Amino acid sequence: MRSLISVLLLVLALSACDNELKLISRDFSVSLKSIDGGTAAVGKAVNCTFTVSGLDADNGDQLLTVFDIDGGNGVIIVGDHEYMPGDSFEFDYKANGKLAFDFVPITAGAMSLKMSVASELVTRADSVRLEVSTPDMNVEFQNVPDMVKQSESAEFNLLLATDQYGVKASARFVKGRGQIFISGYDATRDEGVALEHNNLVVFMPESTGETLIEFTVSSRYGLPVRKQISIQVNPLYYEEDVFYRPVVSGCRLQGTVYRQRLPEYEV
Image (cartoon, rainbow, N blue to C red; front, side, top):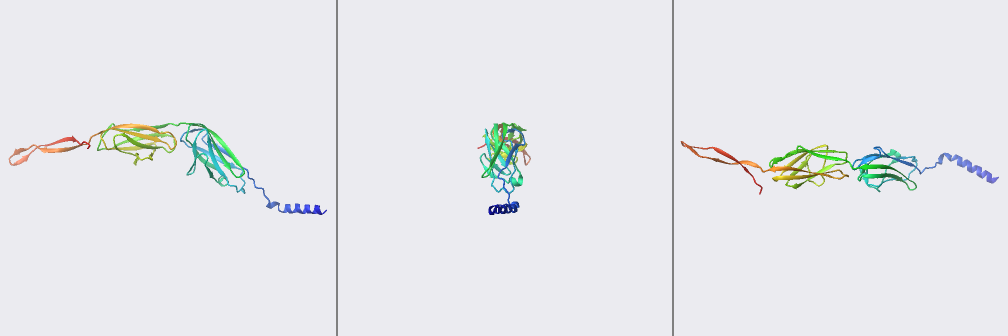
């Protein structure tokens, strides 16, 4: 009888505390989607979303997100941060629900992009298959002069057509000397100059004869395109040797002015 009373009291106590007792779920589910479908191109960002569902609001576990690639290589860009395969980072899925990011393939071919979230007890992952191609990057030069004088500068256009990410151009002199600017920036610097669709190029020669300039256009992740242009630089001419042929007319010295155009040769 005494045992029965104790059991009843325990049941009543548990019932009274029932509102204060709550089980915390440590589990969740994930889903990865490529908004741009299953095709991609080297150097072109693929828009993706990674959703974590079913997170208990009282679950205080630390969640680490990791991405990996099977069959290729690339990076993901989250805001201003770039992550390589195997890198881990934190993201507040409770507040945001899903993570939006860009995946930028570095290599071509069939590959699988895998995203996973792990706590101390649970790891969930999802993946998408992508067929990555090598994109076209068309580079053309327009209005390039055949020849210029050494005292003059030449202007022409570099035209770019591509979907690749972060395209820059640099230049070097294969033959001859001078300065080369793209959109007002020195193109011979190592970091290159960021390109738009239509870019103004200014060439300022410092030597005569044939000048051969090689341009290297590349994206941050894709393969470079190299093109050369040739411009003939003629010597600088100037007027000098002004002299008089004396003609005596009364007491005045008269004469005829002769001007001859002479080349200025380099030392």
